[in-house]
Image (cartoon, rainbow, N blue to C red; front, side, top):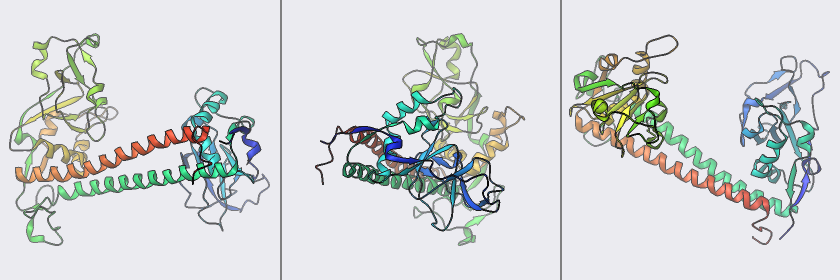
Length: 422
């Protein structure tokens, strides 16, 4: 096994070797990369060039292909990336908020990049950063960062392994993004076209205008109705208030807050705080399985469905609880209000200039497109399937990221010897 010799970063790479001078021609044109353009292993390249005259005073550091950009401000965010020059005929310049690290002969720049992302280097940077609100590294500290340095062949093998894994991670992220975009488009189609007798999306109004009719919500399938939410509501109520001192780890009732619900309406049941309350006094307010919840204040208009929990659950004061008759599928309504059209209806009825608020009566007055109960269930199944695909890919992504973290720790420390592997 080869020794991983600690070496100063300045001994294995050039740092900030090319910079624009103050005397640069005012009409000199280039593409500027600022701090906000960079995140971990990602750079959003600028679309338009600017001149030196137009550029901010921080636009100084010239970039070459395969340079590493290391943000010196808040290095814990790891806004570090390898720059790949989109067009060799154009000039790219980075902010002075970056350290620009360039490969020296005999060392692998990708290996250096992975070292900079490692836990060991994170700890070094944390110890060296100065400032509380915006901790930053100075140039001399960056030059003295200790990089574990094996022979070049070992560096290249380690970099190749990690680069291959990063490629798989990137492709998985792309798949998730495609599924997410597909879901957004599907929601739009499902709540305007629905599913026909063959189990597929109906042809669009353009393709089959005779299958649609005008309504208060625009064109909808002829078989559908437009009803008020209140027409199918058995009961609705705001979550009750109680004194803050009632919260207790030894409580008997869990309390569901708006902060326990994410933007897609998923409830974090394990995050709900407990409260010690008079059960009989609050019994009528307790949630039942399949209740619809809508956030009425703070981030307004998030719809969610309560399932089950091993403690009684009380909705918070910033939630409205709806319980429906059998004529409407709660999951259908939740998905409708999660989609762009339904979400806009909820946001539009919010009142108040600073602190927005939704009234329960305003939700009950909203009109929604309503297929038969059978078609509502079919629509929900369509959405459930695509969500399952997204969840599968997200689980796979999390697994890959865990493997990557373990590999980085093992490979960059020399605990796993790659020098004898093919």
